[in-house]
Image (cartoon, rainbow, N blue to C red; front, side):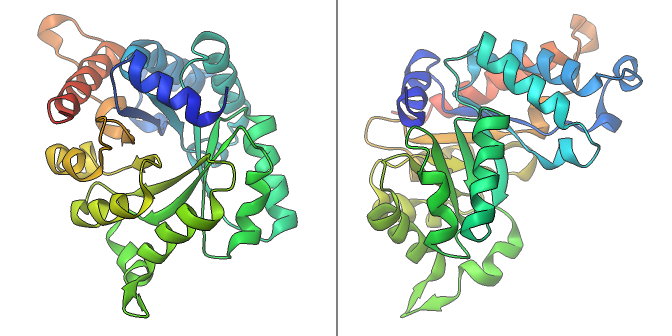
Length: 275
């Protein structure tokens, strides 16, 4: 099953456009986990089990693992997902972008070492830096387009022949780079007008949409701007708001139950505007 096929099936099976980001920060873990040698694996496993029924994808952010030499726990988490939730895509958030020979190794890292279904990549060095990911014909390459951070405007809004650079990227990926039909784009929820412009260019290509939850993106505006005609087409990511949801002590919630509650609330809020 290709990345797009798996993603489409997950959208339907879980009736969800919610992507759960895995950005583990030990300092924010419950106290009883912080001293465990496998704290990251245990924390993420509990989050995955609690939220899998609400998710169309899981998105591990590789820097949170590699910065503290926890790549082995990331491998274990990806293995756990493939074994227990093989129907839910793994999107490795790595934002790779380098020359072809190096990109080949980054592709092997994402697709062989971690078994990811898709990986985020940067378009800045051009097609030859993205092409090695496309050699994996069943895997996805999700290209940065209009990112959710404020500084993204420094380059992405530069005009090329009167058109913002991010729209050139959208058209380039949709019309030339999407050779296997497995590409997607990253467009932030913090810019719904730009999101709508990108959707008008790319047709039904999937969008990874960060920026709801802790970053404050408006869910209604995001869904209205980015959904496809069938009410799908997006992986709307929430990380910190779900991972570190405050347990309701009165109801005896633990961190995983709190994460499930917030994930369900976020999924339901998204679904209200899908039409």
